[in-house]
Image 1 (tube, one colour):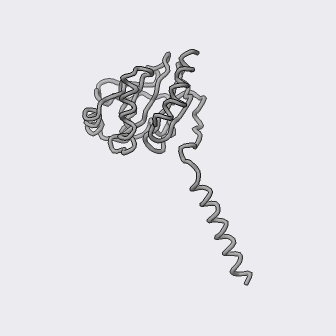
Image 2: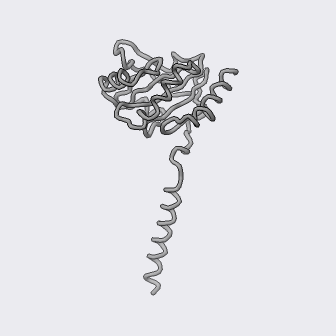
Image 3: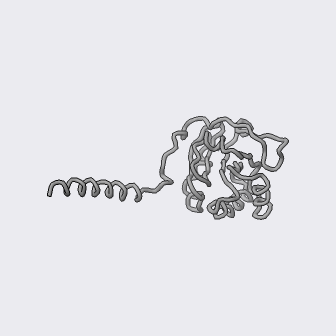
Length: 175
């Protein structure tokens, strides 16, 4: 009888761990980069392969980095919100086109509108790896000194924008 109870107990423990793990929100995974300098990058621009963009170009201003791709359904979902935010000019938004084909990214922005000041082109995903991206979309708030202050995993919602991102941007602009 004991030989059946031990495997049953191990199975029950595994089910309990799985149940607890599946109940957690993956967007709450803390980034080890919060409070640290944003990883340096310098890559070509999506629209102009003869020009480059890097995070050093944004020093001195508070800005958002939105990691997106044309193949990302969640990016399409959050895109109208970024279009509204760009029209309101509350904070500059820079894009990081992640693991995409250049022509697909350019066409996507042509069809849906382009809320970005500039989009960096990260075809091989190296910049995304440095930023700890494990899925798109992801959005970062970066301060004037180039320090990552917040990371939003998944599509940005109006609630996240109003309760977390924009209040943080206002606070950082005062500093």
